[in-house]
Image (cartoon, rainbow, N blue to C red):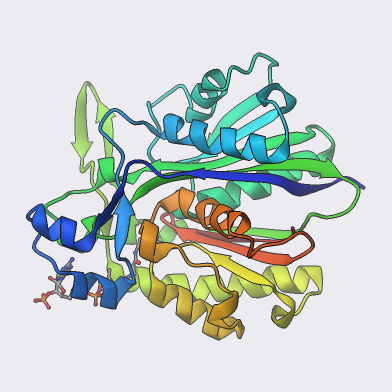
Length: 321
Ligand code: ACO
């Protein structure tokens, strides 16, 4: 049987932190107190107008390749999860492939599952490797969410940030990834969306994030618990055996509620939402890489990664690091 395991992680954040006070200074009608009490967010990173998702992805990918001791052409599958691609097409994954100097004909494509995107991409890569068709995958979550924020809408613009995270998955004889589960319910597509498109040279609809915050909150807490239980059951592992829970970093209160329901102490939860804000598909690999690099996550530990986002989509991956 072929399994997959993570052999390297990397991440990248553009520029310098933009604090809640910085947003107030930029004229947004908000306060540090309001943002931090409701979300736990203290700062976020915002890309320069010239910086694209593929550029952030490149920096994160080089760090992951370096951690794995691999060259770009050692990769035979590139998957980028993003809701803020550089272009309508070609995919951000192929742009990343070119920036990495890859010329080995590796498969490359994007996954669009908004804030669940990285977990979706990881599960897809695991299945490719499990099937025997591919041996080494570069899986990236990369976003410039600041591009799709209406900076006059204080109820959304304070929540998000930009960044990228990457992992290298490699075929091996023992897992690695123990279980994955992916779900979506399109009936809830309107509670979190950017309901616009490009048509005839113009934007039709809205090019900005729209969100029903309280509906998202309730939905996220419920499905994150359900999908966590699903992968734990599939792998025959008790939540008490988890070394680390690495949930999507949308909001500290959602993270706390998820941990409470699972019975995982907050000391075993990786959180970066205070420093990064919500970086959508980049949030889980950014948090993973932060905890790998500061030594909290160690080889042999059991990790639960979870995503939830627009669509509505949600998913989880349980893995032995
Ligand atoms: N600063 C100050 N006041 C604000 C701000 C702001 N940035 N934004 C909204 N307000 C005001 C509103 O205008 C409203 O004022 P009013 O009572 O005078 O009308 C008041 O605050 C309350 O607004 P609500 O929208 O009801 O605020 P709520 O307590 O629901 O908090 C929040 C909003 C933080 C978004 C909350 O609903 C939440 O945490 N939702 C989860 C959604 C989330 O985290 N989304 C992230 C993306 S989704 C994802 O990644 C899965």
